[in-house]
Length: 235
Image (cartoon, rainbow, N blue to C red; front, side, top):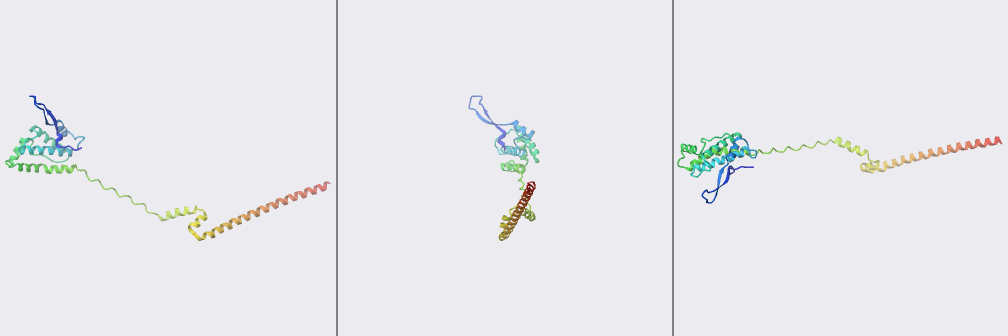
């Protein structure tokens, strides 16, 4: 939140004691001005407040130095300059004026040879305030944001690991699919070998079953022969 020199004033309705129309007048907020000198304000930074106070004091000294009515009395100007010095010190800026109110300001510019020249008085104020205003405005500006850190480089590809993973996946595929994808024409050879192997296994199983059956038949025939021989002997 920014603050300006006008924020140090309140608008107050001034009633006419003789019954005439009321008027609105500016009144310096002494309490607000004093609070800035005692401690930092939670809603405004010290550089913000310092810029507003520099404008307030310089503008009022220009008024009194060029024949215009100032907004501040001598007492109020002393408070404003004292507060300005306190805020500038908190902001880390060296600042001081060679006078403390309107009366001492006039004495000073007379000693500087600016008796008959408004412009000479403005030049004096320029020398007193411009450098201080530039310094505090630079201190007020936020520092540029740091450049974003570069994104980390992608991890290098390790070909031997990638090939190993591919080979493992390939080994898990059926033989026919593998040969079809990777070996092309050799599929027929491998498929034929596989069929021959299955046929041999089938023939072996059939022969074993046939041998077992004949063995059982022979055993049964032997038992029958023994029974018949026994019956003949008994008869």
